[in-house]
Length: 119
Image (tube, rainbow, N blue to C red; front, side, top):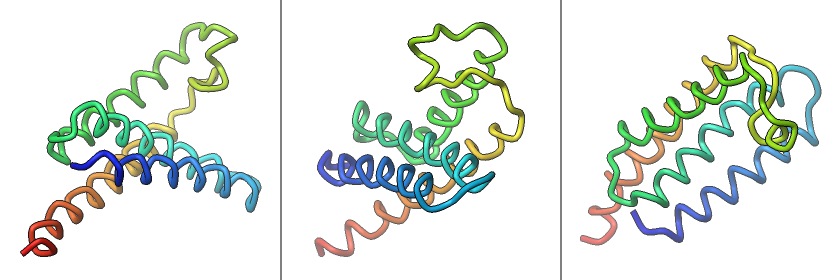
């Protein structure tokens, strides 16, 4: 997958996360943020491995998100808490899966669409 669309997707993901925080209070920005966190990790996986299949990128991004969440059962260094969080919250695991599934679906649609657009 070309890097420019992936970089744009990453920037849009960060903007969406910031926008959700600005516009809503309560659980909406928290759980949307969890899903978007995994979408951002998905884009980083695509930047590192442009040819990765959608299902593999989804597993990698959800797996990393889950690993970070489970790491919160221990002590996260204060310097890393703004990025990795500090409190284990079981519902976050679901929202990470939602983010990975949404990114996987968008990626699969992009790949299906690309050959038709160039032909």
